[in-house]
Length: 188
Image (cartoon, rainbow, N blue to C red; front, side, top):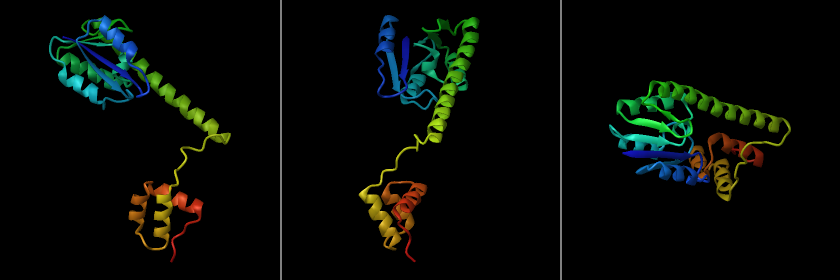
């Protein structure tokens, strides 16, 4: 059976281009995820891995659609090989049923991981520059009426700390940081 796996990184992105490719390749069943390929904890990916069986061919637009991690991609390819499933990547024009295809798949997996790590590094560098220029202060905390109520109740001894944090909907560090910012202190 011809099976396809398609993926985009976010729910806002469109799968149409990959769906069109799968139709052109005559794929009979498609599994699709809209989330990062940083690991294999993806619902449709897991379903696809359970579904494929001996003699099937799995088609992907590129190896990066399966994974952005070299280790995860190599593990996936090994699992497919153990099940006697052929993997074909349209972009890289590789077929893992050949020794050359297996070798080149390893090279492409490493390149895909390098690309992801480079993107993350550039993102970190950009954030550091923006912070040094005072343009980036992280995600703004949402101070809600509920937060203020819980913080005041805690400060007046009407609510236990753990309960106030849980009810306020923020983490413990954020709770204390926002209390400090608002001048809310625990009364003795």
